[in-house]
Image (tube, rainbow, N blue to C red; front, top):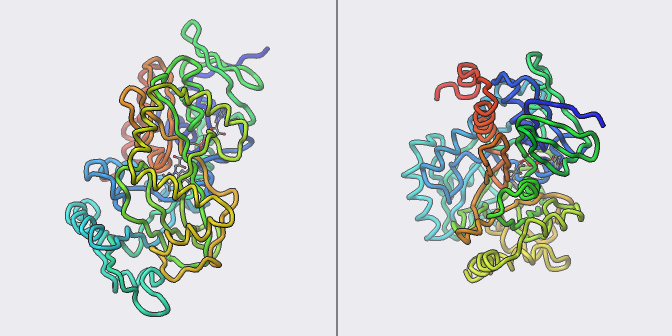
Length: 445
Ligand SMILES: Cc1cc2nc3c(=O)[nH]c(=O)nc-3n(C[C@H](O)[C@H](O)[C@H](O)COP(=O)(O)OP(=O)(O)OC[C@H]3O[C@@H](n4cnc5c(N)ncnc54)[C@H](O)[C@@H]3O)c2cc1C
């Protein structure tokens, strides 16, 4: 059998894998790089536009972030902004629209007021918006039958900001730009599923459903499947995985931009929000829900087995799940979200939640969006018996890295890729063109 060799192999052609391909091909002198993807094109799983919320999370509306965390997230998101601004000519990557985080009732309003005070310097375009100011931007949030809604609301937001990204388009752009490089050998190999990775005499051997490959270094960007490949090699045994699928509902054209809600700090993802979907004309998308689903990839029944392989349901996992379910807020949240998936009752159940955003919405306005939404592989740290809130990385320090990327993994894809490029370049004794990197992806910072 023919074995092909590369300096670096990237597994997975979502926005994380293609971002790494772009960074390593543009800013490092790693000579030969291959990207292996099991499907026939990039971004068919979580990075597909209809499978995520299309939000560039930059720390201004995520009420669970501290200011420090928000500044880090802002820096990461800005890399995408810089990239999009210099590559948008042929396709739209970044969309400008209004955005806000909406507070309803006294407690939430207090949270937003305090946040505005603390965050305004870092996000100077964000303003506190009272009912009248919200009305000018999002009249369907403030009005019921033509009159202003009666409950107390306040928002922290702005009229226009580059806050929506087509992460699939971004993946395709990364790929096209990488292939244009002439200094390194770049191969993108589709329909190639990596089944196992083994290290033998300083080389990684990748067994796939097609040809086999060897390489000096590997980065696995296969979202939930990264953990499966890691554990097959004996890494990351301290993690288990709780896949949380997110579904969406479609409604008429009701919002001009993104309306988020104050987030429950105990949960790793944003509360249900409303978004203008730039891939579907004249419709508003509401969601995502949060449904515990025993599969690593949505709509792929075979990934149920993969989930069972990474679950490792032992005493520590059971204890963590028990601790999660013991919390009344989380328990209610899980049951509520379960209802949003049950035909016959789901639309009415979901309506209760979205009426907080658009009070005049009716059941007949809502349609369950079939085959929209992916899976967020939330990791459980078995040692700490805790759910990990965001992305996770396994880096054994041996030229191999595994990235697990629940939300907001797409927003941080370039920052994460930069970190991985640095680790891999050091391992391969390759160099990075720091001036070019700073100039192009972090100007003025
Ligand atoms: C409902 C929902 C809403 C979200 N909203 C947002 C949001 O608004 N903003 C945000 O920043 N993030 C959001 N996210 C998270 C975001 O979608 C992910 O972080 C991001 O898409 C992950 O990209 P990825 O490339 O790591 O994974 P993916 O896009 O899932 O790509 C992984 C790739 O690996 C391939 N693959 C898997 N196994 C193998 C194998 N063995 N061999 C070869 N190839 C393999 C897959 O085919 C796939 O192409 C959301 C996620 C969900 C589910």
